[in-house]
Image (cartoon, helix red, strand yellow):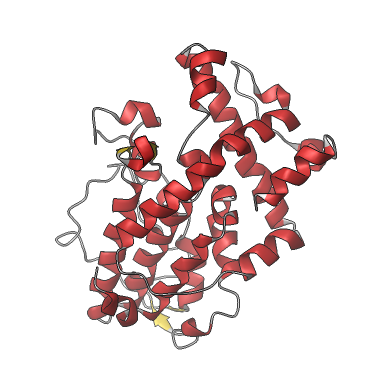
Length: 296
């Protein structure tokens, strides 16, 4: 994607906030991440009164989606006025509203937990030469649609498509979306017991997302400062940038995974286990908790 398109759609620059590791760790809080990261982002100030428009892009968007997915207009009725910031915050979670469920996209999607995992994750081997999942392509796809809508002066859908692109970028920077568990554990600890691996990896994955979403919603200053350190920049290739962020996140995956299990060993279970309540406020082991927060 030529750099000039980044300038054509000024708000695209906000996607660079995904450069902070936090954006991945708080994957379950796309709306909160977007809200805090874009606070005071001046490029959006020119888009404070955008007319809500109907979806008219079926002929342009040839991707397949969950047949049961229904568009929701959460900010008002068609014809109402909204801001770009509200659109980005509200619809950053939209791909998680079952947009990518119940699809047959690849014979390999079983290794990412189905069609939604295939589109929201990217597992890599051999230094990125082998990849499972198409999240970088989904980010690029929705950015292209955002540019298209912007050129039609349909700013509502330009920013709504951009919100979807942000979602996939955020997913790609989540370390456990790049590597669900250390490969050595798969081979030696669990001896390729796939059912057990899926349970433990899922427990760790969803629990750590819930943990950071809880603290972000509570206004934890450490997380807010991490988001506020974000910087904007231009990028030349959406998909390449996303894939590079994914590889960077992968380098954190094993350390994140092992620290989570050290803090909450009960997650190492064949049953579905999630942290909740007092689990969000554990203070021991203190050193491991500090290391976990240092990843932010």
